[in-house]
Amino acid sequence: MNTQNIILSSRVRLARNLADTPFRGVNTAPIAAKAMGALRTIGGYTMYPMTALDPLEQMRYVERHLISKELIDSAGSAIIRDDDKVCVMIGEEDHIREQCIMSGLQLKDAYDELKEVDKTLRGTFKFAFDDVYGYLTACLTNVGTGMRASVMMFLPALSLTGSLNRCISGVTRLNMAVRGVYGEGSKAEGYVYQISNQKTLGITESEIVSSVENVATRIVEAELRAREALIQADPAGLKDRILRSYGTLCNCNLISKSEFMDLIAFVKLGIYYNMLECTDWNALESLVTRIQPASLCLDCGRRLDGSERDLARASMCDEIHTFITRKGG
Amino acid sequence: MLCQKCKKREATGYMEKTVGGVKTRVYVCPECFKQAQLEMFSSLDDFGLFSGLAGSQNTRVKCPKCGTTLREITESCFVGCPYCYTELAEHIKPIIRNVQSAAMHIGSRPDDAPNNAEIADLEERLSRAVASENYEQAYKLKERIRQLKGGKQ
Ligand SMILES: [Zn+2]
Ligand SMILES: [Zn+2]
Image (tube, rainbow over all chains, first blue to last red):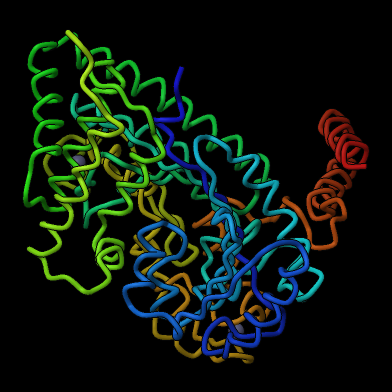
């Protein structure tokens, strides 16, 4: 079973705050400098104060899922490890948010990576901790472990067969939250969803990791069953839609982000059904990031308006045929 | 009896709601029950649940360290500083219970020591069980404490 292409990535985040310090209205620059000094001793880290970045560069980090929009709004700093897997946000909702992002289903590994980061920062700062409530956080929804474990999942078949809502209500009953990763509001672009734990208190870190892992695994099974149902319901129609999606992506001159996200989802389905062949899955995933507005502008070296972006995005799609080809038959 | 939420269908059961520390029953139909359950789990952002707490007196109750009022906390679920947790302990406790369905941290500690909070709670329950001569319960608690103390070494 290829969970890699259904579970796109795993993320673990720990919220930490300094003892005796208000959660808001503090100058966090000295905290960032001190954290940077400590992290430097355990690996290659670079600090990016939001105030030193161009708005496009700020947004590119959001598009790469490394930082949150809130960090930009609060003019905090990001300390990012050279491999882009670990990012420590300073001055977001909490003073410190340590996070580790890995591809596929690797929540346990991501948490293990964070333990070292947390230990290092614990040696530098005195964290706000209470024997009853655990790690104290700005929002009561994070208190205790301060831990949010999440997986980003690609669930086209559950959506297309109309079983996603049933799946979501099952998941929310297990105290997990589901939200679309791309697009605004309730409409999830590209069928990509994030599933994360809600509960952070009265549960241990390893229980959180295994509960999210279990739910993710069950959703993978449901998605695979839905993919079976989808192809059986209308094999010719589905193949047509997949091949047309591929054809359009490779042969367009203007393409919006939402159209791209929809078509690339069908291309990925085509790879799953062996109608298309992909020789470089990483190139495919990175393309999804590169066509996002800010990343696209930076790639072109200047700010582009809407239609200029659609043009640039379409020309970026020209490379798709170099790593995705149509299978014979 | 008519469902108290939609006032259309027949109520078949009730939900218990705690508003301002007072438990009340709301009689509902199966549809509304399901809806309420979903809403409760799907959005921790919906703090309408606590709006009953945000009375006028709660603007006077505030954290002496940072000045955040209890009303602000109940409406947003955000506290102002680490001391809010201890200074407003009696007020914050029920809110945390509502949000987290738990009252105590049992995860890791900054000093890497075993989590004594869970053990202490169990020991307190053990002494109560012994006092009320509930020996079966006491035995179970003793076993669990032994596991925790042994298991984390
Ligand atoms: Zn009703
Ligand atoms: Zn306070």
